[in-house]
Length: 349
Image (cartoon, rainbow, N blue to C red; front, side):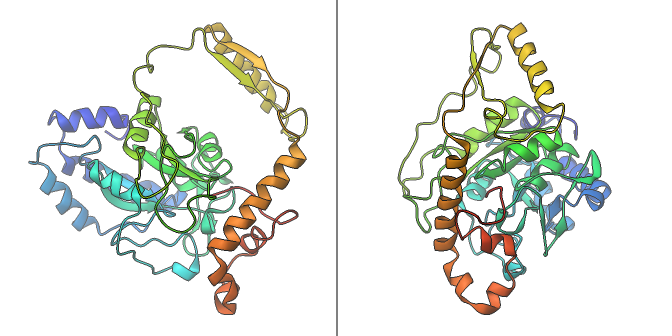
């Protein structure tokens, strides 16, 4: 079961070929065996309680796609009754009274919320470590990074401690950990997965939640769980049909290739060659690959990005920054990320 896709597991549960209690037992055993080395799963709920919840689902007619599937939610998403820290020592013991929208939609689809996945402090940075839970390691090489900020989710997928996972992305946080851990991370068009109705919802358009998985079908189906209008926030987007084209192939598609942005983005030796080889395979499958010039100067793009990030962080965390005791428990990169151009730190929520 651990090697099945989420879709295969879902079909087996719906057909009563496998029981949720069997799935939970296998998942708990995998977490116990694998997680100590990679530290991807955090805030694990009591195993006996989880087994009792799973057994209660054995004889219940399956409804949602995730029915009976254990799910670890990214620790930037509030989960009712389950510790949510944002990787910050300020919230090391915080237990939310309600779910954020993503967690609520996962529960509605039948997922058993069993744990969280590790993140950088406040989700800021491309390496998943924090003073509450420590570092998440790359399952292919424990001396290397799993990426971030969805590093815990990516490592959990790669080590079969998750069938699918939620992630979030401000500047690569769904995509780089997926690449580092050899899984899929998809950043949807902003607004397709709506925000929670908290704080500033008109200007805060940089970060979005999205799906991660080990197969494209899994990613597409999880997107349909997460997407859909939230009438409490602006900018709704229609949910596209992401399933009908899964078996269509790429013949006739056009792929834009920006490469290293005209030489402005440094690449380690061999990376561009590997990408070009993959693009040639896509051409062999019928796609047209169009090399593109940079549509915007890299320096101006970076300046705009750090300015907007600083505006959102400074506004959203003003109360924390103005309290000297809380400021002292905030990592320097996070404080720098509120300062605009020239600040330290990179990555995203």
